[in-house]
Image 1 (tube, rainbow, N blue to C red):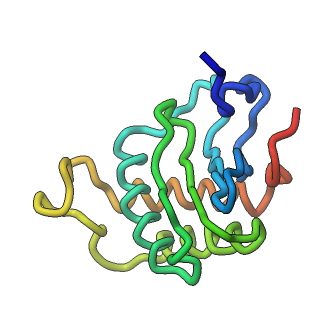
Image 2 (image 1 turned 135 degrees about the vertical axis):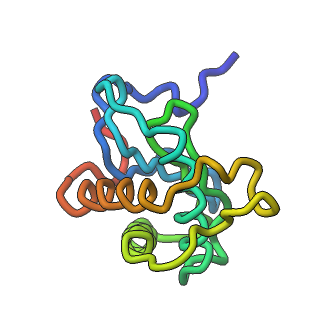
Length: 151
């Protein structure tokens, strides 16, 4: 079996940040790494689920909505993948920050918070989504861990 691209990254040195994970034609996969792997910190299932609902809604209603292919959690509970078509890195990063700011300032109901809209709405928490968004926005605003992976 060929090793997939994400397994070629040294996760022992990977820091929280916003990275280009891979490019496939006109689709770029971004690694939104929230926590350092093996640091003893993981995104809880409630945080992950809650941020997924809020961020997916905000990014799919942004100026780059037509190019959003997918947003979802990493199984390792350290971040999310964002797949975008035809988008320039700095523009995507700008809209990621805008989406996070939208979540932080969100005043209203949690998006998709009903049994009709979600398969397990009982784990959703707007506070969890807001707290995780604040933490990651801090990383993005105060870090050089952006761009492409580097050792």
